[in-house]
Length: 222
Image (cartoon, rainbow, N blue to C red; front, side, top):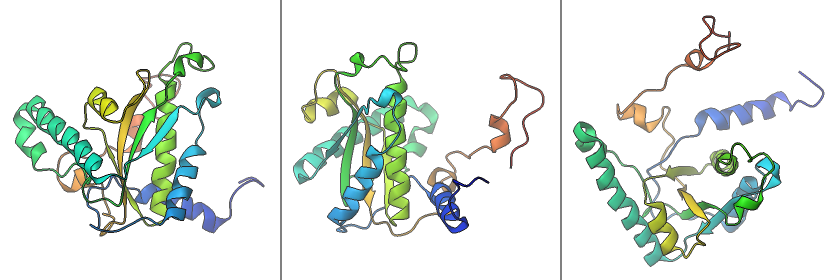
């Protein structure tokens, strides 16, 4: 513990938001997100760290109902293609609810901005750090949403080129996420994909080693 640590109650709130964050698919139809709350969430996203302070994120709020339906159509078309690609698990995948685009209070498309190539700091050998930075922004928004009592679902099942055309995005930009945001009926205690028996999370020790990739003695954690 250092002099810069948060209070015990504040630390518990931070860890609670992290542990109780869920990838949500069920939303309260007809609900809204107050404008001041949405502004706070977007500011939280914008406060994320970014490599070289490049701030590569762009947020497109979808407020037009017809445009929302077109986004849903793009996702639904890819959902069918994903089911085909999954082979024997295709039917099982189609039984999952994978998005709440038509029900959520707010729909956001998050994209990598244009003109990213001019940013060399931190990207010369790892150009994908622009995507890492955008992911940090999304995680900030996600945790802030949970603290506000709102659910968020990250939808990645779409054709990026088709979505970019729909939204009139520049050629050197790229959509990376469709975010469904809003009030939800409840927050499940476990990830939905575990509840639906699609897969199960593995414990932390399987992911931590010391002094190399395959060290025989995992580092003690927790």
